[in-house]
Image (spheres, rainbow, N blue to C red):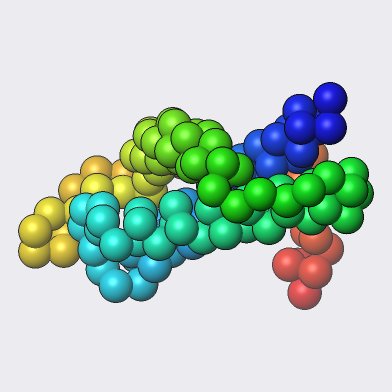
Length: 138
């Protein structure tokens, strides 16, 4: 029972870490103006997720449950948990990123098409339409 609790906590930490590292990877790719995925970012993300989940596993196992800590077996189990979750998260993030992209650009940098789903997503609610109207009249 203690082992299951330890791996459930690790799974929770893995899911959160995958989301955060994929967001950071996306921002780094935008910063470096990369048009396609960069393999070193993926490798670094998996290593970072492995370190965070291994730390969560060690803390849960040693301090909360008082069990003996092993090194190799939890590392292999956590790696086999991380890889499918990261791949699934990456494909889900790429689909979300492509659906809600603001616009598509050509090779020369000109805007080709505004994405209608992005425009629909960013509309203000009707009750905020006249928000702060009094200050606009001045």
